[in-house]
Image 1: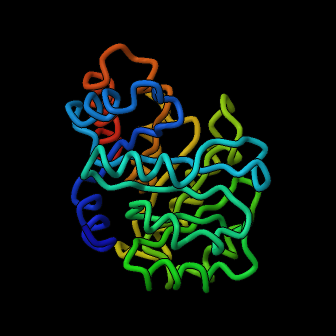
Image 2 (image 1 turned 90 degrees about the vertical axis):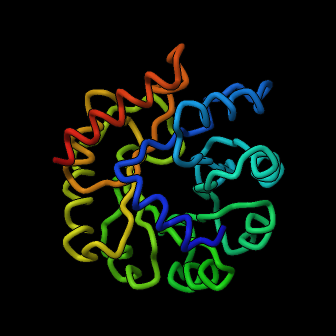
Length: 231
């Protein structure tokens, strides 16, 4: 599936709740993928952390490749790594469909976004809560997706920063319907409706899904709350 096809598919599914696999049971990865597919997940969100751009260290290309063998759903790969331009081809070859880099992580984000597009993938640009939007705004013509972090990247268990809602509204105003908008961090039953109402189409959820005994029920509830907020 091309990056453009994945983007179109996700836009049509909007608002889509994307499971963040960071909290899944990696010892039973195949079963976790099956459960999420049966639950109706539209795509999988993968958080790649390098221990440098963020203090946490997660996984890299082998896990992306393993997931690619297990599913045909889009793989939305969020690169929380320094100088992501060094590894674009490797993540493409591992099976990523969408690659999102951080505006703070590279000196030339526009050039990196162009490289991602040239490889046939969807190109995303992420921004942390404390970073001005100016850098993202300058790169919008090179983006297919913008990811607004509602907590600082790499830290779990933080409270949702409601200032992120206005940032989403601002990006929607600037980009119109051309851009897919995604939010990540602190998204749960209490916040997901406001995120969708602000214009977010892709809503990344971790504990709200993986700490539930029934993934299907959790996804249905979250999607319903997002849909109610969007109206």
